Length: 61
Image (tube, rainbow, N blue to C red; front, side, top):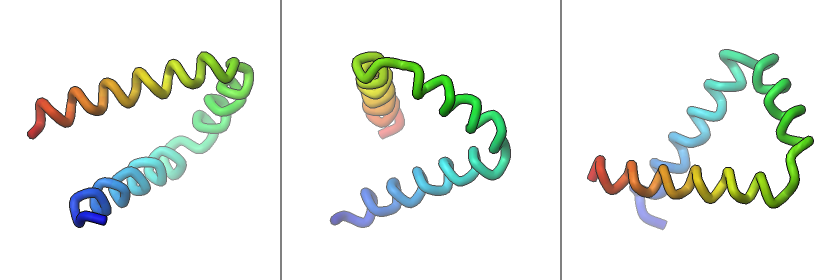
């Protein structure tokens, strides 16, 4: 595994932890709403997030 990929994964954990630390009640409310969504809709949101992330990564690099 490359150092850059490992660093990126570590940053994901930092950001996820920051959200949980800073706004735990809001995170819980968001998860309650996410459970109500269909798997298809969750996949769509995931695909859109990946697409935005890839485009942003290309712009940064």
